Length: 81
Image (cartoon, rainbow, N blue to C red; front, top):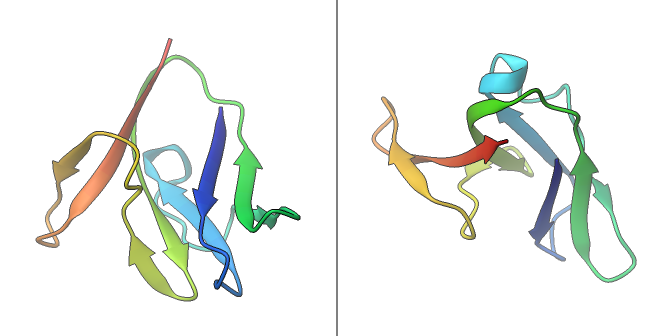
């Protein structure tokens, strides 16, 4: 699964979610030449919730479905088939 975020002003971006026990430092994205941030993660079939961590701030993916979380914000949702 490839995750891609358009955030050219960011200095660093990580992804945290149910697939990595919400570890906000274990999966850094790489900046592309066009200003996107990207990472490819092999995930087994299933439903996953995640968020990006952009320069230390939690950020919900604007391009995926969302569900409320316990922190009064929203998590992004993907389904791997």
